[in-house]
Image 1 (cartoon, protein in one colour):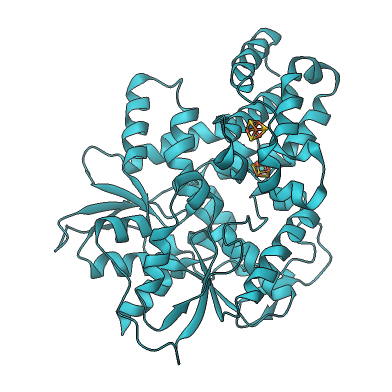
Image 2: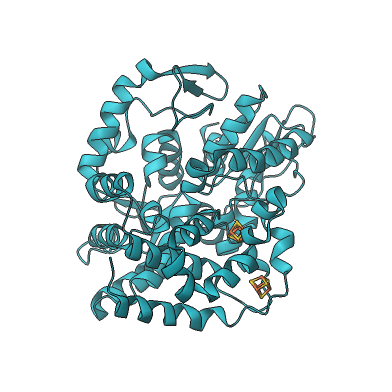
Length: 435
Ligand code: SF4
Ligand code: SF4
Protein backbone atom coordinates (compact mmCIF):
# COMPACT_ATOMS: atom_id res chain seq x y z
CA UNK A 1 0.00 0.00 0.00
CA UNK A 2 1.33 3.47 -0.86
CA UNK A 3 1.99 5.80 2.04
CA UNK A 4 -0.79 8.35 2.61
CA UNK A 5 1.65 11.17 1.83
CA UNK A 6 2.54 9.63 -1.54
CA UNK A 7 -1.14 9.01 -2.21
CA UNK A 8 -2.01 12.65 -1.49
CA UNK A 9 0.75 13.78 -3.89
CA UNK A 10 -0.51 11.56 -6.71
CA UNK A 11 -4.11 12.64 -6.18
CA UNK A 12 -3.18 16.33 -6.20
CA UNK A 13 -1.39 15.73 -9.54
CA UNK A 14 -4.51 14.04 -10.94
CA UNK A 15 -6.87 16.74 -9.69
CA UNK A 16 -4.85 19.32 -11.60
CA UNK A 17 -5.83 17.52 -14.82
CA UNK A 18 -9.50 17.10 -13.86
CA UNK A 19 -10.32 20.81 -13.72
CA UNK A 20 -10.34 21.15 -17.50
CA UNK A 21 -13.55 19.08 -17.82
CA UNK A 22 -16.38 21.61 -18.22
CA UNK A 23 -19.10 18.94 -17.88
CA UNK A 24 -20.47 19.68 -21.37
CA UNK A 25 -21.50 16.04 -21.88
CA UNK A 26 -20.35 15.82 -25.52
CA UNK A 27 -18.55 12.61 -24.65
CA UNK A 28 -21.90 10.95 -23.90
CA UNK A 29 -22.88 10.65 -27.57
CA UNK A 30 -19.74 8.73 -28.53
CA UNK A 31 -19.19 6.47 -25.52
CA UNK A 32 -19.90 2.85 -26.55
CA UNK A 33 -20.38 1.87 -22.94
CA UNK A 34 -22.92 4.61 -22.24
CA UNK A 35 -24.80 3.63 -25.42
CA UNK A 36 -25.36 0.17 -23.89
CA UNK A 37 -25.96 1.01 -20.25
CA UNK A 38 -27.31 4.60 -20.31
CA UNK A 39 -25.55 5.13 -16.98
CA UNK A 40 -23.93 8.52 -16.36
CA UNK A 41 -21.34 6.80 -14.14
CA UNK A 42 -20.08 4.90 -17.22
CA UNK A 43 -19.35 7.93 -19.40
CA UNK A 44 -16.16 10.03 -19.15
CA UNK A 45 -17.98 12.99 -17.52
CA UNK A 46 -19.39 10.74 -14.81
CA UNK A 47 -16.07 9.07 -14.10
CA UNK A 48 -14.24 12.40 -14.01
CA UNK A 49 -16.83 13.73 -11.53
CA UNK A 50 -16.23 10.66 -9.39
CA UNK A 51 -12.49 11.23 -9.55
CA UNK A 52 -12.89 14.88 -8.42
CA UNK A 53 -13.92 13.50 -5.06
CA UNK A 54 -11.24 10.82 -5.16
CA UNK A 55 -9.43 12.04 -2.05
CA UNK A 56 -12.61 11.44 -0.05
CA UNK A 57 -13.88 8.37 -1.96
CA UNK A 58 -10.60 6.49 -1.82
CA UNK A 59 -10.76 6.45 1.96
CA UNK A 60 -14.46 5.61 2.23
CA UNK A 61 -15.15 3.37 -0.77
CA UNK A 62 -11.95 2.50 -2.64
CA UNK A 63 -13.34 -0.75 -4.03
CA UNK A 64 -16.38 1.12 -5.44
CA UNK A 65 -14.10 3.63 -7.21
CA UNK A 66 -12.01 0.79 -8.63
CA UNK A 67 -15.13 -0.99 -9.92
CA UNK A 68 -16.31 2.19 -11.66
CA UNK A 69 -12.93 2.75 -13.25
CA UNK A 70 -12.76 -0.82 -14.52
CA UNK A 71 -15.96 -0.12 -16.45
CA UNK A 72 -14.17 1.59 -19.34
CA UNK A 73 -12.88 0.27 -22.67
CA UNK A 74 -10.09 2.88 -22.75
CA UNK A 75 -11.21 3.37 -26.35
CA UNK A 76 -10.50 7.11 -26.37
CA UNK A 77 -13.76 7.99 -28.16
CA UNK A 78 -14.48 10.58 -25.45
CA UNK A 79 -11.02 12.17 -25.65
CA UNK A 80 -11.28 12.39 -29.46
CA UNK A 81 -14.37 14.66 -29.29
CA UNK A 82 -13.67 16.55 -26.07
CA UNK A 83 -13.67 20.32 -26.82
CA UNK A 84 -11.59 21.01 -23.70
CA UNK A 85 -8.89 18.55 -24.69
CA UNK A 86 -9.25 16.62 -21.42
CA UNK A 87 -6.65 13.84 -21.44
CA UNK A 88 -9.25 11.31 -20.38
CA UNK A 89 -7.19 8.16 -20.99
CA UNK A 90 -4.12 9.54 -19.18
CA UNK A 91 -6.36 10.41 -16.21
CA UNK A 92 -8.09 7.01 -16.10
CA UNK A 93 -4.83 5.10 -16.42
CA UNK A 94 -3.16 7.13 -13.68
CA UNK A 95 -6.23 6.78 -11.44
CA UNK A 96 -6.19 2.99 -11.90
CA UNK A 97 -2.51 2.95 -10.94
CA UNK A 98 -3.17 5.08 -7.83
CA UNK A 99 -5.97 2.77 -6.72
CA UNK A 100 -3.95 -0.38 -7.37
CA UNK A 101 -1.10 1.18 -5.38
CA UNK A 102 -3.49 1.89 -2.50
CA UNK A 103 -5.49 -1.35 -2.55
CA UNK A 104 -2.76 -3.67 -3.81
CA UNK A 105 -3.08 -5.95 -6.84
CA UNK A 106 -5.42 -8.92 -6.64
CA UNK A 107 -3.56 -12.26 -6.23
CA UNK A 108 -4.52 -13.28 -9.80
CA UNK A 109 -3.16 -10.06 -11.29
CA UNK A 110 -0.03 -10.30 -9.17
CA UNK A 111 0.73 -13.80 -10.40
CA UNK A 112 -0.09 -13.01 -14.02
CA UNK A 113 1.59 -9.61 -14.33
CA UNK A 114 4.58 -9.94 -11.99
CA UNK A 115 5.17 -13.69 -12.27
CA UNK A 116 4.44 -14.31 -15.95
CA UNK A 117 3.92 -11.29 -18.24
CA UNK A 118 7.00 -9.46 -16.98
CA UNK A 119 9.23 -12.38 -17.99
CA UNK A 120 8.88 -13.00 -21.75
CA UNK A 121 10.71 -16.37 -21.64
CA UNK A 122 8.43 -17.74 -18.98
CA UNK A 123 5.31 -16.26 -20.64
CA UNK A 124 6.30 -17.83 -23.97
CA UNK A 125 6.95 -21.22 -22.38
CA UNK A 126 3.59 -21.29 -20.58
CA UNK A 127 1.69 -20.39 -23.73
CA UNK A 128 3.66 -22.95 -25.78
CA UNK A 129 2.45 -25.63 -23.33
CA UNK A 130 -1.04 -24.15 -23.60
CA UNK A 131 -0.90 -24.46 -27.40
CA UNK A 132 0.16 -28.10 -27.11
CA UNK A 133 -2.58 -29.15 -24.74
CA UNK A 134 -5.41 -26.75 -25.62
CA UNK A 135 -7.23 -29.49 -27.59
CA UNK A 136 -8.18 -31.09 -24.26
CA UNK A 137 -10.10 -27.98 -23.22
CA UNK A 138 -11.27 -26.37 -26.46
CA UNK A 139 -12.86 -27.58 -29.67
CA UNK A 140 -13.13 -25.98 -33.13
CA UNK A 141 -16.47 -24.40 -34.04
CA UNK A 142 -16.03 -22.55 -37.33
CA UNK A 143 -13.52 -23.51 -40.03
CA UNK A 144 -13.84 -20.31 -42.04
CA UNK A 145 -13.20 -18.08 -39.01
CA UNK A 146 -10.82 -20.55 -37.36
CA UNK A 147 -12.69 -20.12 -34.06
CA UNK A 148 -12.95 -22.52 -31.14
CA UNK A 149 -14.99 -22.69 -27.93
CA UNK A 150 -14.58 -24.32 -24.51
CA UNK A 151 -15.36 -28.05 -24.24
CA UNK A 152 -16.32 -27.61 -20.56
CA UNK A 153 -17.84 -24.80 -18.51
CA UNK A 154 -15.10 -22.23 -17.90
CA UNK A 155 -15.54 -18.89 -16.11
CA UNK A 156 -12.73 -17.35 -18.18
CA UNK A 157 -13.81 -18.57 -21.60
CA UNK A 158 -17.57 -18.46 -20.91
CA UNK A 159 -19.44 -19.03 -24.18
CA UNK A 160 -16.89 -17.14 -26.28
CA UNK A 161 -15.84 -18.25 -29.73
CA UNK A 162 -12.15 -17.37 -29.84
CA UNK A 163 -9.06 -17.79 -31.99
CA UNK A 164 -7.02 -20.62 -30.43
CA UNK A 165 -3.28 -20.38 -29.77
CA UNK A 166 -1.21 -20.95 -32.91
CA UNK A 167 0.47 -24.36 -32.99
CA UNK A 168 3.83 -22.62 -33.49
CA UNK A 169 4.15 -19.07 -32.15
CA UNK A 170 5.82 -16.76 -34.63
CA UNK A 171 8.92 -16.13 -32.49
CA UNK A 172 9.84 -19.81 -32.84
CA UNK A 173 9.41 -19.67 -36.59
CA UNK A 174 11.40 -16.44 -37.03
CA UNK A 175 13.45 -15.91 -33.85
CA UNK A 176 15.81 -13.24 -35.19
CA UNK A 177 16.37 -11.20 -38.29
CA UNK A 178 18.80 -8.52 -39.37
CA UNK A 179 18.70 -7.74 -43.07
CA UNK A 180 20.38 -4.83 -44.82
CA UNK A 181 18.30 -2.12 -46.53
CA UNK A 182 17.55 -2.89 -50.17
CA UNK A 183 15.92 -0.70 -52.82
CA UNK A 184 14.03 1.37 -50.24
CA UNK A 185 17.29 2.37 -48.51
CA UNK A 186 15.44 2.17 -45.18
CA UNK A 187 15.68 -0.15 -42.23
CA UNK A 188 12.94 -0.79 -39.68
CA UNK A 189 12.74 -2.61 -36.37
CA UNK A 190 9.68 -4.86 -36.13
CA UNK A 191 7.82 -5.08 -32.81
CA UNK A 192 5.62 -8.17 -33.06
CA UNK A 193 3.28 -7.95 -30.04
CA UNK A 194 1.82 -10.85 -28.00
CA UNK A 195 -1.43 -11.42 -29.90
CA UNK A 196 0.18 -11.50 -33.33
CA UNK A 197 2.98 -13.76 -32.08
CA UNK A 198 0.68 -16.24 -30.36
CA UNK A 199 -2.67 -16.07 -32.18
CA UNK A 200 -2.12 -14.48 -35.57
CA UNK A 201 1.40 -15.44 -36.80
CA UNK A 202 0.17 -15.14 -40.40
CA UNK A 203 -0.02 -11.35 -39.84
CA UNK A 204 3.69 -11.24 -38.91
CA UNK A 205 4.45 -13.34 -42.01
CA UNK A 206 2.59 -10.77 -44.11
CA UNK A 207 4.57 -7.90 -42.53
CA UNK A 208 7.89 -9.52 -43.43
CA UNK A 209 6.65 -10.35 -46.91
CA UNK A 210 5.66 -6.76 -47.70
CA UNK A 211 8.83 -5.29 -46.16
CA UNK A 212 10.97 -7.69 -48.22
CA UNK A 213 8.95 -6.85 -51.34
CA UNK A 214 9.70 -3.15 -50.89
CA UNK A 215 13.40 -3.74 -50.19
CA UNK A 216 13.23 -2.60 -46.56
CA UNK A 217 15.88 -3.93 -44.16
CA UNK A 218 14.37 -5.55 -41.07
CA UNK A 219 15.81 -5.69 -37.57
CA UNK A 220 13.96 -8.22 -35.43
CA UNK A 221 15.58 -8.68 -32.03
CA UNK A 222 14.72 -11.87 -30.13
CA UNK A 223 13.30 -11.87 -26.59
CA UNK A 224 10.67 -9.17 -27.19
CA UNK A 225 8.12 -8.70 -24.39
CA UNK A 226 4.56 -7.44 -24.23
CA UNK A 227 4.13 -3.68 -24.86
CA UNK A 228 2.90 -3.47 -21.26
CA UNK A 229 -0.65 -2.23 -21.78
CA UNK A 230 -2.40 -5.17 -20.06
CA UNK A 231 -0.34 -4.52 -16.92
CA UNK A 232 -0.84 -0.75 -17.08
CA UNK A 233 -4.59 -0.94 -17.57
CA UNK A 234 -4.65 -3.35 -14.62
CA UNK A 235 -2.90 -0.69 -12.53
CA UNK A 236 0.48 -2.48 -12.37
CA UNK A 237 2.93 0.28 -13.24
CA UNK A 238 5.86 -1.78 -11.91
CA UNK A 239 5.43 -4.52 -14.54
CA UNK A 240 4.65 -1.92 -17.21
CA UNK A 241 7.91 -0.06 -16.55
CA UNK A 242 9.88 -3.29 -16.44
CA UNK A 243 8.54 -4.25 -19.89
CA UNK A 244 9.23 -0.80 -21.33
CA UNK A 245 12.85 -1.00 -20.19
CA UNK A 246 13.27 -4.53 -21.53
CA UNK A 247 11.84 -3.66 -24.95
CA UNK A 248 13.74 -0.38 -25.06
CA UNK A 249 17.05 -2.20 -24.67
CA UNK A 250 16.16 -4.44 -27.62
CA UNK A 251 14.57 -1.92 -29.95
CA UNK A 252 16.73 1.15 -29.49
CA UNK A 253 20.11 -0.56 -29.45
CA UNK A 254 22.71 2.03 -30.56
CA UNK A 255 24.59 -0.85 -32.26
CA UNK A 256 21.55 -1.55 -34.48
CA UNK A 257 20.27 1.82 -35.73
CA UNK A 258 16.94 1.85 -37.60
CA UNK A 259 14.91 4.51 -39.38
CA UNK A 260 11.53 3.41 -37.98
CA UNK A 261 9.89 0.99 -35.60
CA UNK A 262 6.84 -0.67 -37.14
CA UNK A 263 4.10 -2.79 -35.61
CA UNK A 264 0.94 -4.34 -37.03
CA UNK A 265 -0.94 -3.96 -33.74
CA UNK A 266 -2.82 -0.67 -33.26
CA UNK A 267 -2.74 -1.13 -29.49
CA UNK A 268 1.04 -1.71 -29.36
CA UNK A 269 1.65 1.30 -31.64
CA UNK A 270 -0.43 3.69 -29.53
CA UNK A 271 1.06 2.31 -26.31
CA UNK A 272 4.64 2.82 -27.52
CA UNK A 273 3.91 6.25 -28.97
CA UNK A 274 1.76 7.67 -26.18
CA UNK A 275 1.87 5.65 -22.98
CA UNK A 276 5.56 4.80 -22.86
CA UNK A 277 6.55 8.52 -22.78
CA UNK A 278 3.69 9.40 -20.39
CA UNK A 279 4.48 6.73 -17.83
CA UNK A 280 8.27 6.99 -18.09
CA UNK A 281 8.25 10.76 -17.50
CA UNK A 282 9.88 10.23 -14.09
CA UNK A 283 12.62 7.88 -15.36
CA UNK A 284 16.28 8.92 -15.63
CA UNK A 285 16.77 11.61 -18.33
CA UNK A 286 18.71 9.21 -20.59
CA UNK A 287 15.83 6.69 -20.53
CA UNK A 288 13.25 9.43 -21.14
CA UNK A 289 15.23 10.56 -24.17
CA UNK A 290 15.43 7.06 -25.62
CA UNK A 291 11.72 6.45 -25.03
CA UNK A 292 10.83 9.75 -26.72
CA UNK A 293 13.12 9.02 -29.69
CA UNK A 294 11.66 5.55 -30.17
CA UNK A 295 8.08 6.83 -29.82
CA UNK A 296 8.73 9.48 -32.49
CA UNK A 297 9.88 6.87 -35.03
CA UNK A 298 7.11 4.32 -34.31
CA UNK A 299 4.56 3.79 -37.07
CA UNK A 300 1.68 1.47 -37.79
CA UNK A 301 2.59 -0.78 -40.72
CA UNK A 302 -0.09 0.86 -42.93
CA UNK A 303 1.36 4.31 -42.19
CA UNK A 304 4.83 3.10 -43.08
CA UNK A 305 3.73 1.47 -46.32
CA UNK A 306 1.47 4.27 -47.52
CA UNK A 307 3.21 7.41 -46.19
CA UNK A 308 6.82 6.27 -46.57
CA UNK A 309 6.78 3.62 -49.31
CA UNK A 310 4.10 5.25 -51.46
CA UNK A 311 1.70 2.28 -51.64
CA UNK A 312 -1.43 3.59 -53.35
CA UNK A 313 -4.81 2.23 -54.47
CA UNK A 314 -4.52 0.01 -57.57
CA UNK A 315 -6.26 0.75 -60.86
CA UNK A 316 -9.67 -0.80 -60.39
CA UNK A 317 -11.42 -2.91 -62.96
CA UNK A 318 -15.16 -3.60 -63.01
CA UNK A 319 -16.78 -4.40 -59.63
CA UNK A 320 -18.04 -7.77 -60.86
CA UNK A 321 -16.00 -10.70 -59.55
CA UNK A 322 -14.22 -8.71 -56.84
CA UNK A 323 -14.56 -9.79 -53.23
CA UNK A 324 -16.68 -7.40 -51.12
CA UNK A 325 -14.63 -6.19 -48.14
CA UNK A 326 -15.32 -3.81 -45.27
CA UNK A 327 -12.99 -2.16 -42.76
CA UNK A 328 -13.27 -1.69 -38.99
CA UNK A 329 -11.26 1.25 -37.56
CA UNK A 330 -9.48 0.15 -34.37
CA UNK A 331 -9.93 2.84 -31.69
CA UNK A 332 -6.19 2.86 -30.96
CA UNK A 333 -5.45 3.58 -34.61
CA UNK A 334 -8.10 6.12 -35.58
CA UNK A 335 -8.96 7.88 -32.32
CA UNK A 336 -5.58 7.71 -30.62
CA UNK A 337 -3.32 8.22 -33.65
CA UNK A 338 -5.55 9.66 -36.37
CA UNK A 339 -4.68 6.81 -38.77
CA UNK A 340 -7.68 5.93 -40.96
CA UNK A 341 -6.84 6.68 -44.61
CA UNK A 342 -3.67 4.55 -44.77
CA UNK A 343 -5.20 1.14 -43.97
CA UNK A 344 -7.93 1.84 -46.54
CA UNK A 345 -5.29 2.72 -49.16
CA UNK A 346 -3.58 -0.57 -48.35
CA UNK A 347 -6.82 -2.49 -48.89
CA UNK A 348 -7.46 -0.67 -52.15
CA UNK A 349 -4.01 -1.66 -53.37
CA UNK A 350 -5.41 -5.16 -53.86
CA UNK A 351 -7.70 -5.10 -56.94
CA UNK A 352 -9.16 -8.51 -56.05
CA UNK A 353 -11.28 -6.78 -53.38
CA UNK A 354 -13.86 -4.02 -53.41
CA UNK A 355 -14.09 -1.86 -50.30
CA UNK A 356 -17.56 -1.03 -49.00
CA UNK A 357 -17.79 1.07 -45.85
CA UNK A 358 -19.95 -0.25 -43.03
CA UNK A 359 -22.02 2.18 -40.93
CA UNK A 360 -20.09 3.53 -37.90
CA UNK A 361 -16.83 1.92 -39.00
CA UNK A 362 -15.06 3.62 -36.08
CA UNK A 363 -17.51 2.55 -33.38
CA UNK A 364 -15.59 0.50 -30.79
CA UNK A 365 -15.78 -3.30 -31.24
CA UNK A 366 -16.26 -3.76 -27.48
CA UNK A 367 -13.02 -5.60 -26.70
CA UNK A 368 -11.15 -3.10 -24.53
CA UNK A 369 -8.48 -5.63 -23.41
CA UNK A 370 -9.20 -6.58 -19.81
CA UNK A 371 -12.70 -5.03 -20.13
CA UNK A 372 -13.93 -8.04 -22.10
CA UNK A 373 -12.54 -10.39 -19.45
CA UNK A 374 -14.24 -8.53 -16.60
CA UNK A 375 -17.48 -7.44 -18.29
CA UNK A 376 -18.09 -9.95 -21.06
CA UNK A 377 -21.86 -9.40 -21.30
CA UNK A 378 -21.48 -5.66 -21.95
CA UNK A 379 -18.49 -6.25 -24.21
CA UNK A 380 -20.54 -8.69 -26.30
CA UNK A 381 -23.50 -6.27 -26.46
CA UNK A 382 -21.17 -3.58 -27.89
CA UNK A 383 -19.67 -6.17 -30.25
CA UNK A 384 -23.10 -7.15 -31.56
CA UNK A 385 -23.65 -3.60 -32.78
CA UNK A 386 -20.40 -3.95 -34.75
CA UNK A 387 -21.49 -7.37 -36.06
CA UNK A 388 -24.81 -5.90 -37.28
CA UNK A 389 -22.95 -3.17 -39.15
CA UNK A 390 -20.67 -5.75 -40.74
CA UNK A 391 -23.76 -7.70 -41.82
CA UNK A 392 -25.25 -4.50 -43.31
CA UNK A 393 -22.18 -4.09 -45.54
CA UNK A 394 -22.83 -7.51 -47.20
CA UNK A 395 -19.09 -8.15 -47.24
CA UNK A 396 -17.32 -11.50 -47.32
CA UNK A 397 -14.24 -10.21 -45.52
CA UNK A 398 -13.82 -7.72 -42.69
CA UNK A 399 -10.37 -6.20 -42.36
CA UNK A 400 -8.91 -4.26 -39.46
CA UNK A 401 -5.55 -3.22 -38.03
CA UNK A 402 -5.53 -4.63 -34.51
CA UNK A 403 -5.36 -8.28 -33.40
CA UNK A 404 -7.54 -7.53 -30.34
CA UNK A 405 -10.30 -6.26 -32.65
CA UNK A 406 -9.80 -9.38 -34.82
CA UNK A 407 -10.39 -11.53 -31.76
CA UNK A 408 -13.55 -9.70 -30.71
CA UNK A 409 -15.03 -9.52 -34.22
CA UNK A 410 -14.31 -13.24 -34.75
CA UNK A 411 -16.24 -14.03 -31.56
CA UNK A 412 -19.24 -11.97 -32.67
CA UNK A 413 -19.35 -13.37 -36.22
CA UNK A 414 -18.76 -16.96 -35.16
CA UNK A 415 -21.49 -16.89 -32.52
CA UNK A 416 -23.93 -15.58 -35.13
CA UNK A 417 -22.81 -18.20 -37.68
CA UNK A 418 -21.89 -15.48 -40.22
CA UNK A 419 -19.77 -16.59 -43.19
CA UNK A 420 -17.39 -13.61 -43.11
CA UNK A 421 -13.61 -13.90 -42.81
CA UNK A 422 -11.57 -11.65 -40.52
CA UNK A 423 -8.19 -10.44 -41.81
CA UNK A 424 -5.57 -7.84 -41.04
CA UNK A 425 -5.19 -5.06 -43.66
CA UNK A 426 -1.55 -6.04 -44.22
CA UNK A 427 -2.62 -9.60 -45.10
CA UNK A 428 -4.90 -8.23 -47.83
CA UNK A 429 -2.05 -6.16 -49.25
CA UNK A 430 0.39 -9.10 -49.03
CA UNK A 431 -2.06 -11.25 -51.03
CA UNK A 432 -1.83 -8.75 -53.91
CA UNK A 433 1.95 -9.13 -54.01
CA UNK A 434 1.78 -12.92 -54.32
CA UNK A 435 0.02 -12.73 -57.68
S1 SF4 B 1 -16.47 16.11 -23.60
FE1 SF4 B 1 -14.66 16.63 -22.34
S2 SF4 B 1 -15.23 18.53 -21.25
FE2 SF4 B 1 -17.13 17.64 -22.05
S3 SF4 B 1 -17.90 16.40 -20.31
FE3 SF4 B 1 -16.71 15.00 -21.63
S4 SF4 B 1 -14.64 15.03 -20.75
FE4 SF4 B 1 -15.73 16.82 -19.88
S1 SF4 C 1 -12.65 5.64 -23.01
FE1 SF4 C 1 -14.40 4.85 -24.23
S2 SF4 C 1 -15.59 3.56 -22.79
FE2 SF4 C 1 -14.20 4.83 -21.54
S3 SF4 C 1 -15.44 6.61 -20.97
FE3 SF4 C 1 -14.31 7.18 -22.85
S4 SF4 C 1 -15.71 6.69 -24.56
FE4 SF4 C 1 -16.49 5.63 -22.71
